[in-house]
Image 1 (cartoon, helix red, strand yellow):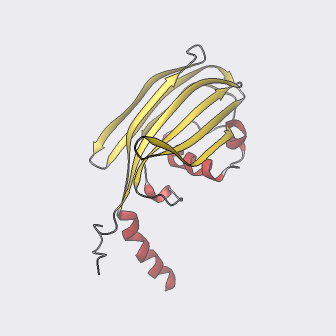
Image 2 (cartoon, rainbow, N blue to C red):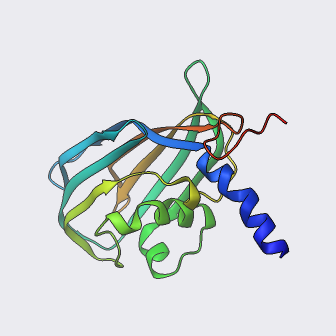
Image 3 (tube, one colour):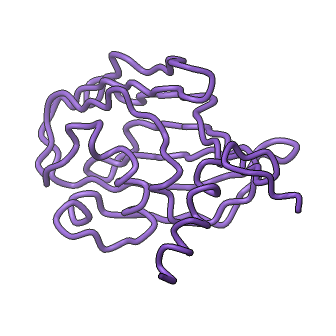
Length: 180
């Protein structure tokens, strides 16, 4: 019975969270290694914006490192709590970084980036939208930017910057009135 009480309390909280993309930027620094064909956001509804990215790795990649940083917008983007580096090939063999696992699980089902190294050819993320129920970290309301810097064979090849808004409004939730 206690389980159902907890589940009942969580349903309105998930319904009161709006999480959506606000900006997406891609830049390749070495077009002989990686080329972006498509890098855009598309508004599907008021609260759902999908991310589409299509790029090609032109040479086989067996060493890939990713620097990830989350910034919070407060009079410009300021460094926040998350700043880490992962070996992408090792991570796809065994999910060893819990924060990277959360980020990867957000877009895994919308992508063909789901096997271990070597990587070559098209790398696609199609129709990806944010779902707050998959985000297992507490976030204060605000606007954030996830910056990813990709190093292929220890050389900085390309960057992606994804900005998103996270708004939690418990007082105006659709499921009930929490002002009592």
